[in-house]
Structures are given as C-alpha cells and as structure tokens.
Length: 257
Image (cartoon, rainbow, N blue to C red; front, side, top):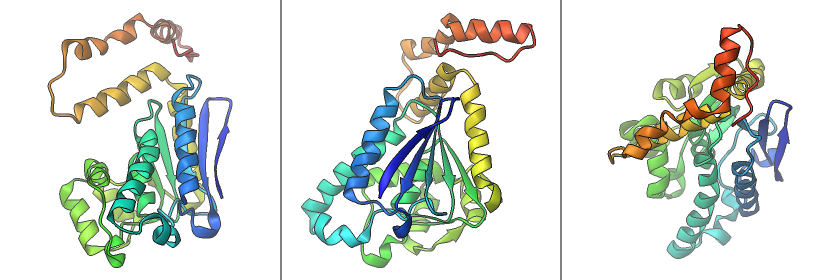
C-alpha cells in the first residue's frame, strides 16, 4: 500500500492512491505519505496540474475502519486522529497548483472528501458516492463538513449525511459534487485530457485564478493589495509570450515567470 507519484513531460503529476485490495482505504501511514507528497508538490514550480486517482478501479473508500479501534478509541484520540489526517489532506485542498480528481468505482467517506477538495472532479458513470458514517455511529468534524458544504451546499450535505445513502454519478453531478461525467472506458482519458489542457495554459494565471476563487469564498472585503494582484499578470513574461503568440497565431510556450 502506498501513495505513488508519476509525472509526464507536460508537468502533469499523477498522485495514485494505491491500496486496491482495500478499495484504497487510508491507513495512518498512507495519510502521512499523502501529506508528504503534496508538501513536495507545493514547493515544485514545475508542476502544472495534479491528477488524483485510485488504483484498481476505485477512487477511495475513505479511512480504513479496521484501524478505528487503535486510532480512534475515545473522544481525545479521535480528535488527535482528525487533526493529523486533516492536516495531511488540507495540503491537497490548499495546493497552489490546479487539481483534477479522476473518480472511478467507490468514492465514499474520506474518499469523497478528498475528491471534493479537487478543483475539477470528473467521474465515471458507474462511480458511487456517499458518506454513510451514521451506520457506524460517527460524526464528521466541522472542518470536514465545511469542505463538503462548500461544494454542494448545506442542505445537500445534510441530506447526504442523515440519510447515509450511497448514490450514483448522475445524482453526484446534479448535486455539484462532480463537475462532469465520462463513460467508464473513457474516464482516465477524459481526466488526463483536462489536465493536459490545464498544463498547456499559463501556470501563473491558473494559480492566481485558483487563489482568487478561494479568496472570494471568505466574507471579508478585499484589500487594495488583493485587488491590485489581479493585474500582476501584466508584468509577467508569460503575458508577453501569450500576447505575442496570439498575434502571430502560434501556440505559446509558457515558462511560469
């Protein structure tokens, strides 16, 4: 079991959750490796896009319930577990580079939370979603609730949690949990085509737009410095390259400066 990284020549990095025998359910060691992987990617200017997917035809079944007796035995230990695991997954949520979730098969519990943290979420038509933790007497941390509600809204999040139902990709699309669907045979091709389009664009602009959208989710008014940052692109080499390439009807080769 592991978290595996690979990279293509476009700067698209694949983060593979690789524990297929358990539908990619996370152990503590996997959370630690996941967080380390995203800390490494955060510092890498050569990354243009990150694709998160699971091995063996499933995205992720969340945390491995088999370890709950050791890792979450009582209120205090459960809170410490949440503090650690959320610190690790927040590195995906807070990553400055664009992210794409390639969702196949099971995407439930913590796996659904990980998918919801990605910027673009593409699901196979046979994928299944839900957070059925009321079946085992568990609640979500407020931080986890906020992440889900930010994507699908409070009403849909509450419905999903109190009913505990596992539902299909069409319903996930209607809820806004996924951004689009693909036929099962085409899911990887569709997800990596999206990542390729992202990688071909100006990386600084993609990072800025991600930052701006995240900032707009906060209620505080924008500062003058924040408003001014929306025009920083005009001072970049990428803007000059893009403008010149457009004028000459060529494809720009952005450099990230």
